[in-house]
Amino acid sequence: MSETGSRPQSARWFERARRAMPGGVNSPVRAFGAVGGVPPFIRRGRGPRIEDEDGNTYIDYVLSWGPLILGHAPEVVTAALAEAAAEGTSFGAPTRWEALLAEELCDAVPGLEMVRLVNSGTEAAMSALRLARAYTGRSRIVKFAGCYHGHADSLLVEAGSGVATLGIPGTPGVTAGAAADTISLPYNDIDAVEQAFAAYGDTIAAVIVEPVAGNMGCVPPVPGFLEALRRLTAQHGALLIFDEVITGFRLHRGGAQAVCGIVPDLTCLGKVIGGGLPLAAYGGRREIMAMVAPEGPVYQAGTLSGNPLAVRAGLAVVQALRDEGIFRRLDETAAALTAGIGEALSAAGVPHCIQRSGSMFTVFFTEGPVRSLDDARRSDAGRFARFFHALLQRGVYIPPSPYECWFVSAAHGPAEVEATLAAVRDAAAGGL
Ligand SMILES: *Cc1c(COP(=O)(O)O)cnc(C)c1O
Image (cartoon, rainbow, N blue to C red; front, side, top):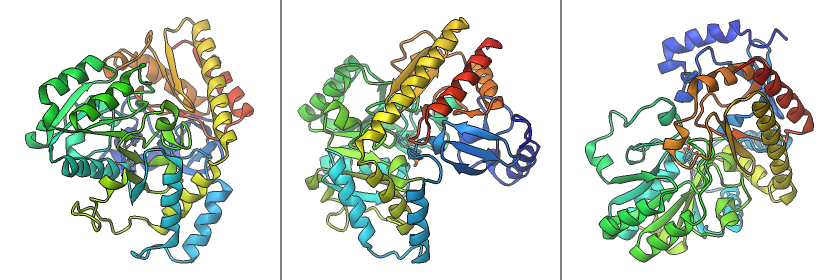
């Protein structure tokens, strides 16, 4: 293993990649724009760790941006994949595995009576919106600044994730028409939602929300916020869509909705349910889902939808998550990390605020609390970049943006917590 932090092979590959792909990447935040420097090119992962092309190893808190709740290459997934691959990788015809996964999802998530499997969270959110508009016969949607629902045109207005990281206010290529039907409001602002419904109530098809926001950093809902969304949408005949692409099967087997006890009309899932392969889903009440083709007129299709490899990897993971003990252990690991990081930063006199929900959390370099995108933007970007590189150099890989969550997997144990906290203490003592 070479000295951690030295990455000549990654630098070489980055140069080649940049000639052949915009920014050298296939998803923007991977390019390290917010923190600078050369991203490690990853060649393998195992459990809580990844290894780059130079042989450096890192404790991984990105976990493919959330999906890998059992860590890298867990035996249940690699075994399911090997078996599936040997039997053929795609048929474009129904398989029993799809029925099994759909049943498992409906059994776990309170709001799901029927689901449709798709390939990405983007597709799930985009399709859920189309369905909501068809069901209500209305066109407007309400979303919240800093929430990210994939890159469909109408959802890129004031979006979180990479859109927030890059400071892109809107995105060229999105027509005024696509954006005009989107009402973007501050997260956690109940008054703003009431005003929007007072003004536009009979034209709003749906409110889409991350029930715990994860794309402006971890921002839990304030008490009463989700309740207000449920009440106002029901009153005005609009649908409530929970985008649980991050929170589904991460906070609880039943998602954030099982924790908060509020049942949405439609739910989007992704990330964890694909077991590290491209798979997502949208679903909800039977009467609404019955409008999806071929049962109903709302068209939505996919050549690789319900792909056998993805479905069997996902099924292996969601079945493993029937074990409630996993969520308790994830919570304990994340709690130990946030407590230790907070102590180290306080000891070094660094202003910060750590927000956590289960096994997802964010270290904001601002006095808290962070309740909205405006609050999150007060985080000190320069200090974050220094913190990020100090940890990377010490073998700890966190998301390369101040607006993302660290994720913990079941493969992260006390040894990883100790090593991570030692790195954080060392980084903080060295000055941030
Ligand atoms: C990641 C994410 C998406 C988009 O999913 P992709 O698979 O990247 O298209 C949508 N919504 C939320 C809440 C997400 O975190």
